[in-house]
Length: 142
Image 1 (cartoon, rainbow, N blue to C red):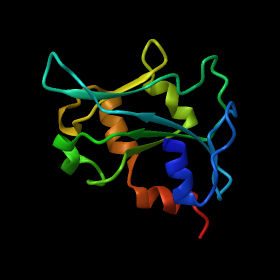
Image 2: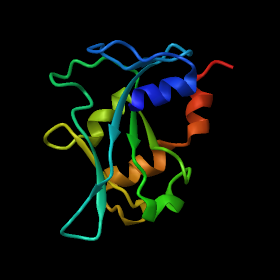
Image 3: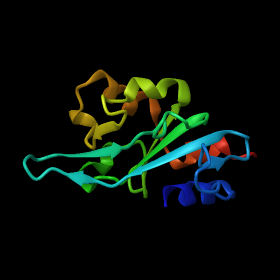
Image 4: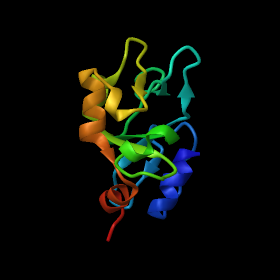
């Protein structure tokens, strides 16, 4: 779902299933795309996103950039880089991905940028969140 959305923004097709990356951009960059729905907490007033195994089941992925897509939390849309979009987008170089993995090799992030406290969560929002326009400008040939 997320792969098709981003590929359509770039005017390309997603790769076939079981390929080590999801999209080959017009700029020849290999993107791995992970999508998370909004996960609401029943026991607390909060929510998070989660992306499973961005390096692959056996660390067998081969890509240049990890693109994390997240279903926006309507309570926090004004705090995202681009409010009122289909997805909140994070664009992470492959070499930086291990920094964000938990013990199970997954990535979790709270949906409220104003209530994240860990250095890794702060870094994701501050350094790697981009808008759709920035995504297209970076990965689509002019």
